[in-house]
Amino acid sequence: MNKKSFGMGFLLGIIATVIVAVGVGIGIYLASPKDTTVSEMSAKKMNLIEQLIDTYYFGKINKKNLSEGTYKGLVSGLDDPYSEYFTKAEYKSQLEENSGKYVGIGAIVSRNEKNGIISVLKVFDDSPAKKAGLKKGDIIAQVNGKDVTGKELSQVVMKIKGKENTKVNIKILDPKTTKYKKLSIIRKPVDAPSVESKIVDKKKKIGYVAISEFDENTAGQFEKELGKLKKQKVKGIIFDLRYNPGGMYDVVCQIVDDILPKGTIVFTKDKYGNREEEKSDASCLKIPMVVLQNEGSASASEIFAGAVQDFKAGTIVGTQSYGKGVVQNTYPFSDGTALKLTIKKYYTPSGRNINGKGITPDVKVENDGKTDKQLNTAKDILRKKIK
Image (tube, rainbow, N blue to C red):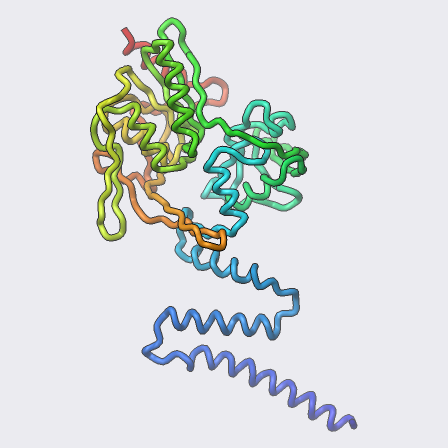
């Protein structure tokens, strides 16, 4: 081949490439007659993108990852922080988390929706996390060398969990010292307690129940801990829902039914206006109550606090709650994946939807980081009510 023919071939190659590129661009627009639906156009565009990736993408292609990314992208297009597509591994992790039994480090973490920061809400006693030095309030910066700030909470939790006796490396930031620290933690089976109780004033017989989240096993634990306090004949009780991110709708309704008199606990409305109510029977606690909440109290916690407030059955103490007034349902698929979707708004008994607003406390109290002013205020309120 001479230089002239080579140059001509090279030029024709460039022209052909340009024609292909232009043809693709024109095809996107010209292949869309007026009667083409949005769904049909989306399918055509997806097929075209896939063809371009197959033909021109230089790196290694993982078809499964492409599919999973497509589903996640579709759901993220709803711009709803509570709707999410779960891969098979993520859904398995979610089920374990809801059950309260899993293999991990023994800590509860949450994600700040405004800045994406992952922080530690609670560290269980005698857990691998506790032994390694992880503390409440620590900010998780990295898991196994990968940054996690801004990542979906379910993905971060899945990275922290794993097989028994395997190691997970976590880099944390102590917000008090602003210093980073690396922890190496061995994963172990964890039976996460979500309810704890104690007497906080022996003289006045004031009981205290802390609920960290509403899991499958929370209702049973709640009845057990509440039973202990009843046997000790408490005359007043404090329910601590601070930093409780929520959980299962039916579980919180079951718990609220145990403490409130007959009436509507909460009701929901879907996009079609259909209304469903959850009711309480006449069996209830007949002693003064205080509910502690803060900005980390969300969803099911707000159903609890909102019902107590509307029934006028107790005093809400603390700061404004998070403001999640919507309900999600999870739809599992036969391949082990699942879709969590926001399907309803919920309303307190008086008809308040607190989404984006939160529950306003009856007594506003902010902690100063030195003493638990909120708990002390709750005790003072009950002391005045107990004869």
